Image (cartoon, rainbow over all chains, first blue to last red; front, side, top):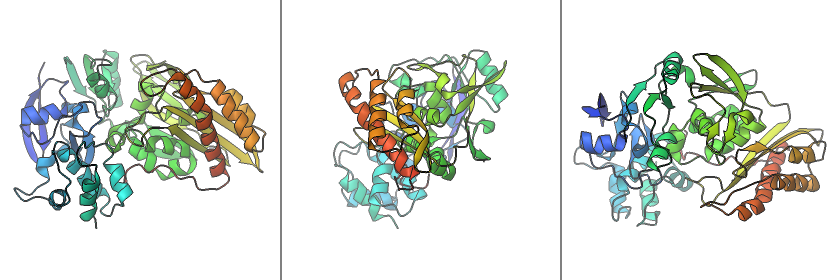
Length: 152
Length: 298
């Protein structure tokens, strides 16, 4: 059975038809067509799929897409202003926060949520907020430095 | 994955009607959907989402008692001033559930009804004498948290019953509590071993004590022998050691990917002691910080 729904992603309304068991991640990647968010573990361990749901970070692989109807979804594609990177995105490049890049969309989303909530996080705050995002390349230091560099 | 129907309930009555018709509830999805992804159990054939039911949300206080709507999230619990001050073990527990994303969406109702013997909030709620309200289209009833757990992953609730609220009575004057878990990492962790203690101090003596063990038995349970070792004592080293030994003696752990049965048994005493010491220290006015939960304000 398919259910018609409208998902609001990065401020745009997308009509979709979904099996009710479809995750928000699959809906956004395959039905909406925004592939920035990644599928890593597909069971909430790695954070590669992180999106914002009404401003709060959510593991989109483990959230039913139909539950997101009427809520604001933000993905990594919604962080930049057109082709202009957000200060946080630019800082990731500057501080070596990106290597293979697979974790980067989720890291950026989690860090964006943190900074919206707490514009002046300590290093501990950053590490706690990003603890649900795994990175196998950077050793995290570049990522943490990038986030701290845009803290006020 | 074939889910035949999905509805989103606007009211408790909507949700109960759906449950009576055989649907299963989903709130934050952090257990139900993850469990399906891991192959533990497929998604239910019929799902009713309860995350928009306003009656089920919120945390409130009435005469010092705590009322948690089923949809109260771990973030909300861990940052709530009354919980932190008077129901501190519960704040300790919610603060270390999963990751920030888990805490933002995972609810107390889902956490309890998932009934993991390793879940964080069950010990604190038992030691703080909490009860849950189970409601169905047939009526409602209060069940002590201790009687809610039926076994690993099983509750004593009927399939058409929805956990709608958790009530925790006002702790007696002089009561302090703590939850401690053995963990290999701070975030995205599941308790290897956990213990909760709640103590009431009066004139330097322990007038009442509660001790519960987590991930050490088929269900999270209180240990009356440990409580007896503390009650009427001075809360000194000997009483704490006796209580911790009793908690370990009551343990019946399993071996799994996180730890062997023998290791869990050995650590039960250590973690129980730490929880009891932390509760006693808080009761004496010493600062034992609640773990940081968000990096932000929620």
